[in-house]
Length: 256
Image (cartoon, rainbow, N blue to C red; front, side, top):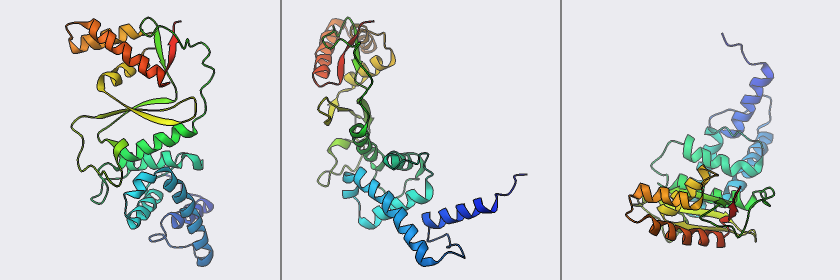
């Protein structure tokens, strides 16, 4: 049989409960309601501030009453795995994509747009990568292994999240997935590039096998496509790799 919680632990849970969900969890008997109200407002406003700043596009598409209730639902239903305020945005994405049960009032692309906005924020605040001195910036992209920047993320969505705004609100999923690379360049600018499925597959193969040369990755794609002339895919892929290098998505090659 599970032993009961110590009294002080029970008080902590009840205290946290009434801060998270004041509508359904009563204030502790020996705590003045006026003081409790201050705790509730400070807690909610702090979390809401980080969510508001992390998801400006999503917020702009939502009615204010709905948005406030969404944040309140987040506080009630989700249990954050980090104490750091800067990671609240990531916890919010986890909530809307993995915890929250879909509701009729939710935007159909709620989780997708939240993830895209989080990716921009996360890259903007990410630490610079470790020393990359062993990368040949001018290396042979076919003969060597093209190295993707740690600050370049290949993402795929069922909605064109990079176009969503108050003037463009998709009502249904796209016929084909939206493939994007969200990245931060040497000027610390966060940008995105829309890519086709072939480029997405190429980046995936190179990320999976750090010994794979650019040519071998493209030949594998040609085989998967059953292309009659694999060299056409290789030469087209080389142009793609060069474009990715110019955009600082590919940093160069690791020939070791």
